[in-house]
Image (cartoon, rainbow, N blue to C red; front, side, top):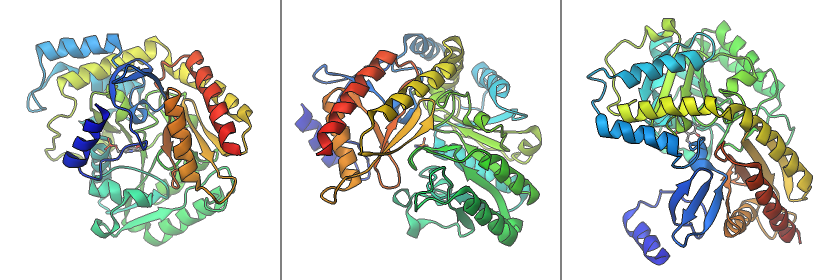
Length: 420
Ligand code: PMP
């Protein structure tokens, strides 16, 4: 029962293992946009295992492909060449923007970012990095070093001293967030002072964990220009935004920018771990020492990913994410609750920033209350932001408008009950 699972969790899992909810639901199965707990209760999943299950849980078509591959060849590592890894690399070259034609496969987002940063060092023969405040790039040490969210850093363990942070810009001029001009001025100054030692700047095209932050129009283009002037590469971390999430196949397409290195993970395997970093033929020449990720694009992961890419195209999930996102965003605005401070994002990557109306409760606790009550009503919403007060809506892209309408009705009631 639920008591037992919590006891085991306390006894055998490290305290750092993070969960949402004071009473975490015990999820035992999933089907497309739905999850089920041990009592059979159905939830509409609005977080998709952190932006992973774009094609839905146990999607029968994708599952069948994984199963077929499991029965023929499970794993060899890259020491033997298999068909799926080269087919997947070819398919990605077709889908990636610009001349990003060569891919290296690994397993997690952290690992792929680690590789991308390392490649930038090898290519430029420089060591330093620039990153944005509020960015999240992973839990390994280099990826953590360029992560700009205090709660995800172990500052006393980080070894890299040549890392420079620039304030993230935002469309809203709220106090803690820099305007585009401030942010660009900081970047110019950092490049003037340290550009000779900086290999790359890394950023998410839309910040996920930082609270669904979209930069003002033109920011990414200008950043890329400034970096080029100083021979600094642009690494874009599309770990959350890739594969249709934002209403474009990759989020950089909203800005017409092609980075030097593009990183993906999460949704590519729709739950089977696989990640990538991709670059141009020219930059790839620098990544020429033997390197391996034992599980990177193993046959099961690569075959599954190929089917995921087919499925996204066949069901037009990119356009669907855009349209359902427009609909959801408009409807969220029309709830018109004083507890809503801001609504932002694009496609099915939307954030609702929550504010408290008095000092009796923090915005973070209020957000947790809302999450908890939405869970009871059958809706699992995500949460992020530097102050953990942003409701995150990142459902499987196969979600139906009806699910969204039911969630909105519940959210309207929950918010109204909290206004008093
Ligand atoms: N980059 C971004 C943008 C992420 O959101 C995350 C994880 N949420 C990571 C990197 C790290 O990925 P992983 O947990 O697979 O290592």
